[in-house]
Length: 253
Image 1 (tube, rainbow, N blue to C red):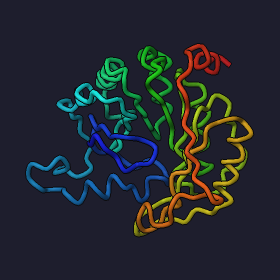
Image 2 (cartoon, rainbow, N blue to C red):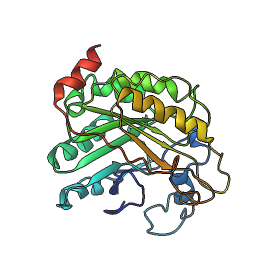
Image 3 (cartoon, rainbow, N blue to C red):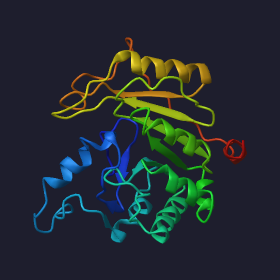
């Protein structure tokens, strides 16, 4: 958790949940797990229990203490919609995001089925918050692409895709109702290389649909090893806030 982040598309991270379990190929070389497991068994360390999932209620109010507006990545070290996170705890996270309306919160999940169910039903009020962006990870055609359809039918004011690590050519995507696309390659000792044509194809689809496109990194042994230039320039597109009616219309479509 930090009020500063080196992640290019956010300003800060907030982790009221720590730890997770693997669910798809994008998790194979999870950076959060690598980091957390280094400290397993270290007394009094925030990750002394490694990457075991834990609720951290004492960290719920952290964004309320940050008075300067920030883009905040929620649970960079976990998944808010993990099946072991109680619904009432997710609601408590939502209440903080609503109270801290001067921030933008970026929630990213690989479990869009649960997110869709909750935001379309008992937690619907939080999906409508204009300062919360709800996203899904998309790494391949088998596991990642189906998450896009679930997100498109989720009650959310702003929807985004984190296509990282991009592991193969995703083909033609349905970007209707999607407000932002981030693309990046994998980093770490065992990184899986990303082909330039895979990223270009997504970029071109975004440009055709008028969806902001953000190219995060090529990846490599370290996140910044190969830079983040695509075809000679940086791509730093971000969504703008909009009225709620657009979000509702795409859910009903």
